[in-house]
Image (cartoon, rainbow, N blue to C red; front, side, top):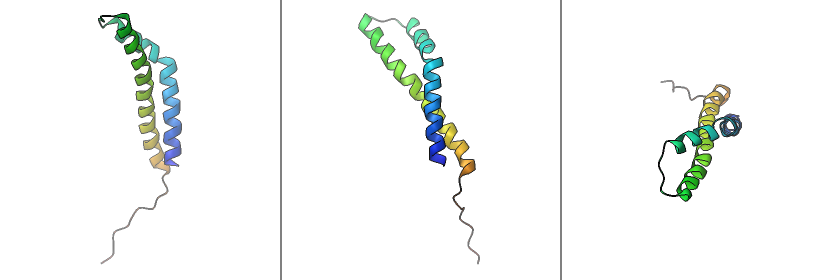
Length: 82
């Protein structure tokens, strides 16, 4: 259950970040940077449009993993009796 919740949260967070924040953050970063050629601008734009949603997916995975820990049914090892 923990893995399923982590995967679902990662996908949803990645899609949300891509739809809501990716373009704005990419534009702000590119506007504040000096480039020597238009190809450099396009390369940086493409990289950022991939990396920003990926970071959102990683954050979603972590959040899903932590929330999924609540539903973890794995029995905990008890201390041996002496």
